[in-house]
Length: 269
Image (cartoon, rainbow, N blue to C red; front, side, top):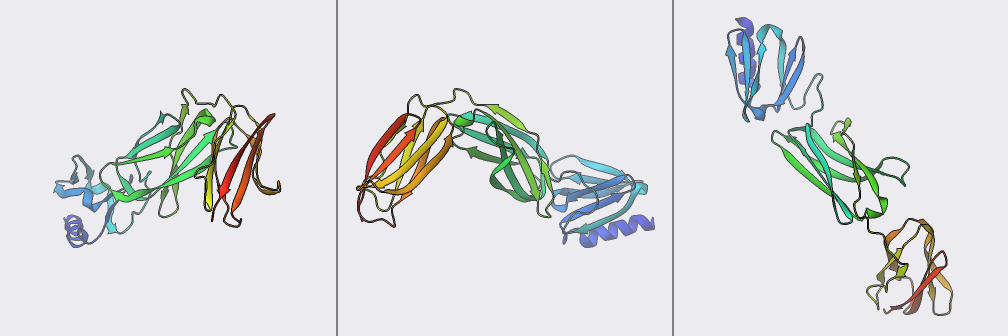
């Protein structure tokens, strides 16, 4: 009886001024947010924890070593963020990622990692902040834009806690359907034109190969090298900054294999 009274006294003193309840048992540990708990009752030799969203758990009093409260969880615990779904859907050139958690404890957020046939491994492409602590489901989404040139893709989530620990989600794979590959080599007119001092330059290449893009002044002197590397088929867009240049006519020359395109750009300050 003294043990029962002691437990009830602890509950009454700390229940409303702490964030977590930690139940240390002989067979393991359990933790939960106090805000998730509707009531705690004593039933003979058992303690019943009833949750606000339904359900709960019943533990034998003799199996409980101690019950503590605090601002953090203690003891061993499984993944504090329960991931209930992770899917990927293609929308034209983009991949939309969707995932949901059933509950969250100390969730700083998610690193989104991607792997594709041209990469050397997993790469972080974005970070999505978590809810921290939540007793109800939380939905997340992220759009990975303009990935049609990659073809086959893999994604995974790296869930990060505030204490630095992390867990990886299962990997999901997607094969891009109706991948849009340009059928011709083209260099579009820059926009805006005239410009001051920046402008966008877009181009497409139909086959893999070495691509070079350079900017020249009206006298034929090279001003800047924008691209000089091997590239996959696809559409590309670059920003050109003429902030250090004087007003005048400039030329952009794009080459890929035996293909050459030139556009005229007018810088007006």
